[in-house]
Length: 234
Image (cartoon, rainbow, N blue to C red):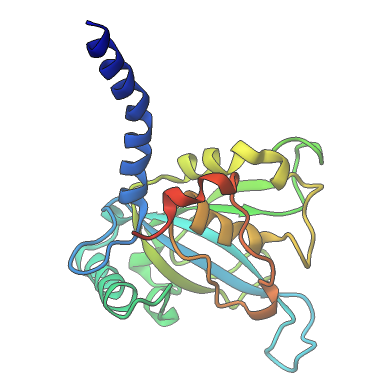
């Protein structure tokens, strides 16, 4: 009887780890002939900000944000093309991301009817500067969108497809909300690009590499490095 109770206790202790392992497996970009879920296309949107110190058309800094676009809202042929990009470029060729051709989505009528949810990080906001996760912002935008206020020149890169929602990713990142307060923001060392890379790696299990050059010099910051093994490739 005692051995049965011990065995049952062991099973109950392992169940939470089994669930985390399943989440990790579901979150990882699968290699070979399988893909990573079916619900959301995960996209990094970037656009230039700051002065043109590097010459005409070249900006010193770039802003980034992570987009969740529901795969089922895309016309079948458009969704199939994105899946092919994931399978070929991210799967077979093992790239961390691949650029979505701008003229394929920018101001396209079919893309205007698709809404994507945005997760990003910045210094501005309504919450107090030192409130947990006060620098993290969400909103919804059309997939065809290519401007933010006066900023234009947006590019979009697909990183994968996932069942993990924006709300779940935000909750995961905000477990360490003091890392993402408005006060913690730094233009050079802890900015929107740091946050985007951290979301991709820590919450989604995707690559934290970015096509941003010196706008993305700081490493991604996971909530608890002691659990980083959960998302390590097998």
